[in-house]
Amino acid sequence: MNVFFDIQHLYYLPQYIPVKDALEKNSVRCHFILYNQNQLQKVLINYVENEKLNYTLVNDSSEAKALYLDKKPHWIIFGNAFHDLEKIHQSSKTAMMNHGVGPKSCYYDWSDCDIQHRFVEGQHRLKRLMERFPSKKFIDTGYAKLDPIVNNENSYLDLEKLGLDPKKETVLYAPTYYPSSIECLPDNFPESLAKYNLIIKPHYFSLIKDKYKNHQKIFKSWSQYSNVYIPSVEETSIIPFMSTASLLISDASSTLFEFTALNKPAIWCDFFKVRWSYRGIFKWRLNKRLDDDLKYFTKVAQQVVNTKELVQQVDTQINNPQLKEKDRLELTELLIGKVDGNCSKRITEYLLNHTE
Image (cartoon, rainbow, N blue to C red; front, side, top):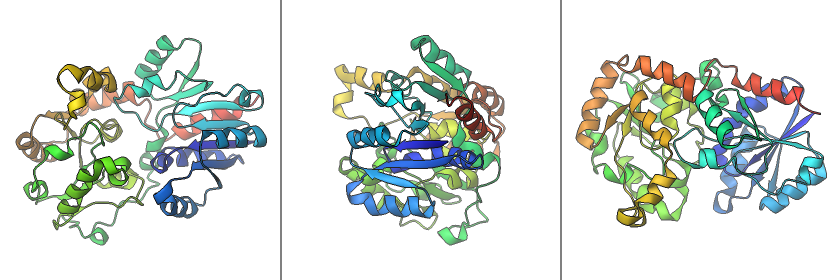
């Protein structure tokens, strides 16, 4: 049996590596279809070769489709929507493992495509998808990306090697690229958290896209502080940073659901820099981009609306990690599904049992 993974962006990969590992333990051949990344091509190649992945590079979806028609894998796993699969379905089955579990509307919208099966995280998402797409097949397996942390397969970071103080608690700030809290924070933001290690893990797009050059300037400035570590674009996986951190700060990122699923405290920055085309009479665009699942952020994380509240709550949450524990545990089962380290195994079993 062989399984292909269609990976449009490098930052998708940490979601699929645990499934690849589980499949290979069952003698399944895994192959990754990667899309050329222009200026980041070297980064992409170095990453996949360090991970010892079997891969083929393509330029676009047309080349990928031609490859699937030629190779005829048993299964193709996609990270988001993919269309025009009728011919491919004559010889291959297709499934979606969404590359994140955030509160953006696209999480649900992407099932409006030709992909036959979808692995889903928790009963809440399962119910919503089944109601919207009753003819499609959805399987609640949980979120495979967290398996290495739950199973202690991912070692903690060596803080000293990162130039940080291992005697300090570590705070992880993981903002999304849009709408983001980055530009709402002061220039001396790291100084206000000087008694903590501050790891700032930006979204991949904040680091590579020209439209987010202002983000990159801010990161360069913050990196000068001695208590700050900012991973490079090559350090794709957020998993080691989530393993190490005691507290997460985020905004509209799926990392907030991921981190609180580990029963760790988080702070939700409910303040964003919004483009003029998403304000005033155009605010409907922002509402359309963000799904109603955003309401769960305030239940699993501490909501703050400005920097002053944020800094105050860092101390509170670090010193009282139990404050939202009850809600975290209840809503994790709803929004992420089982967090037992066996999500990849459940996905593997489904793929193995549905080859015909």
